[in-house]
Length: 251
Image (cartoon, rainbow, N blue to C red; front, side, top):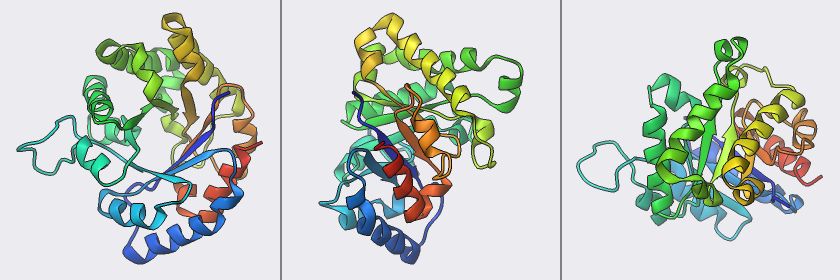
C-alpha cells in the first residue's frame, strides 16, 4: 500500500513573522496526523529557518524549484546539492507556473528532474493540462507528453524514487476543482502509462492531486484508488486547513 503524501507549496508567500506563526501551528497539530507523510516547500530564503524549526518533527522539507545545473556561473540559480545541504528531501519540478509563466519546456523540466535525483532529492514532477486543452479533449496527450520527456531522459525506473503530481491548470488558484472522477481518470491514465513499461514502478509511485484541494473536498478526492495525496497551494498557508487534509489522507 502506498503511503499518502501531503505536500504544501507555499509559493511566493511569507515573511519572518508569518512563517514563524505557520510553523508553530504545524508543530502544534502534526501529532494528530498519523499515517500520511507531510512536507512543506517554502520559498528558498525561508528553507533553512523552516528546516531548523521543524527538525525532529514528522514534517519533511522541500523546495519549489531547482536548477538544471550542478554549480558554476549561473546567477540566480540554486543547485540540487545546495538544497540537500540545507535539509531538503523533496523538490517540485515542472509546476504549471514554471511551465506557463516562465516558458519552461518539457525537456528543460526533465533535466531539472534528473539533476534533482542525481543529488539525492525526490522530485515531485508536476503534469497537467490547460483549460483549453481539456476542452479540446487532449488531456491525456498533454500529460503523456510531459511524462515522456522524463521517461526518455531518465527511464521509467526513475519514478521509483520520485513523485508525480497531477495539477489541472484550470483548477489552480481558481476555486475550481476537478471532480473526484475527473481526477481519478487522469491519475489512472498516468499509472496505466507507467504500467505498460514497468508494472512494479507503476504500483509503487505516489501520484498526488494538485488542483485546489482543501479540507472540504480532500476526503472525497483521497478516497479515489489512484490518488495518493495532495500538492497543496493556498490551504498549505493555513495550519488548520493543511493538517485537516493530512488527517483526511489517513482515512
